[in-house]
Amino acid sequence: MWRATILTLFPEMFPGPLGLSLAGDALARGVWALETQQIREQGVGRHRAVDDTPAGGGPGMVMRADVLAAAIDAAAPEGDSRPRLLMSPRGTPLTQKRVRALAEGPGAIILCARFEGVDERIISARSLEEVSIGDYILSGGEIAALALMDACVRLLPGVMGEELSGEEESFEGGLLEYPQYTRPRDFEGRAIPEVLLSGDHGKIAKWRHEQALELTRARRPDLLAREDD
Ligand code: SAH
Image (cartoon, rainbow, N blue to C red):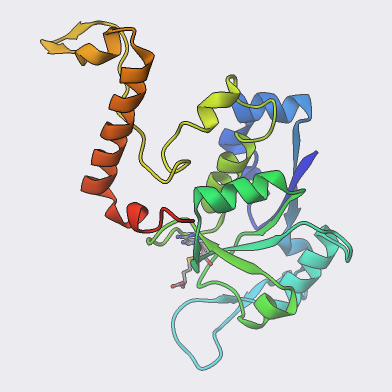
């Protein structure tokens, strides 16, 4: 079973939206499992402090390495083979390729930071892989972790209705997806492209591929440049 363990100061945020729809049904059926670990349980002192002021000064607070280490060790004892991810805007941008690899593995241990982030030393001390979900700053790692898990869980066997739909989507072939249409045939004077109503599957496949290429060239030429990966 694919198993995610989330280290967070806000366990109430989980499963959140992943308790609904496809991911939620799969969670209820035991296709995947989700555990949370309250980082504050490992906090220090009477107030269970998890953060402190940055060495060298500056704004905000930094999460303590010793507290995070204790939380990681409690959630994932030695021998747990799951990758340890730290959600971080400095991380490697998440791609569909990485999502697929994670979905094929045993699950993930995901550390969600808050405040200004974590003491740098925890990253090497617990072999954390920094993962970013985009070039913008969230107020915490929880929404990033939900996004990552959503992308993984929908690829698990038996989660998506039609297995094929996972393979036809944007990024899977290194291209953005072709445009989709459904009824009605005429919407406010806009028709469905004739070729899609032709019943000629060869022609349809060719048209879709051309559209995907054109869209990708116009919007995301960087994807074409890395089509080899
Ligand atoms: N001071 C940090 C940002 C801290 S934001 C910096 O400039 O890099 C607080 C936390 O939210 C981060 O530590 C991270 O866990 C999470 N977070 C924010 N933006 C994110 C993003 N784009 N991807 C993944 N996690 C993010």
